[in-house]
Amino acid sequence: MQRELLRWMFVVLEIGHAIIELRREQATLPVHPAYAEYQPWRIALRVMGRALVRLFIQPDAVNLQRGLLAVDQAIRRVQEADEPFASHFDTSVLRRVKSYLHFIRTSLLDPQSSLAAYAVGQNASGVVHAA
Image (cartoon, rainbow, N blue to C red):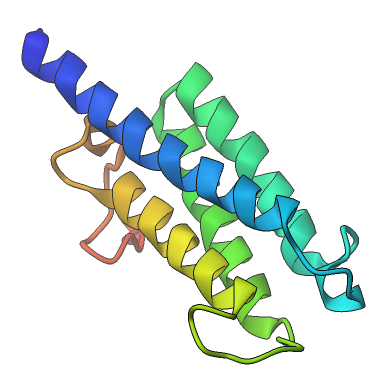
């Protein structure tokens, strides 16, 4: 029981920290159309946030899959976005955002986490196998 609680603690801590960092990045965005709230990547981050809330309120295979799909969609939208400023990691908001998204995805797929019990039928890359 204690081991399972520790697993939950770590997955919540890891993903929670990444979400906090994503919010910090968004709170300090430069005033520029590429960073506006209506941009597809910003919308995808909000959708992902709601999917992760559902996952932690009701952890199950369906909500884990929804969460993973939302994270993947957010990653795609960030990759598709145009970075108006330097693309160096220290000055690129979008590169840092993408880094946090990959961290969240990795945490969701961690075979040692409590969520692993809900990852039925997935390989190491998170792809669901057809039965």
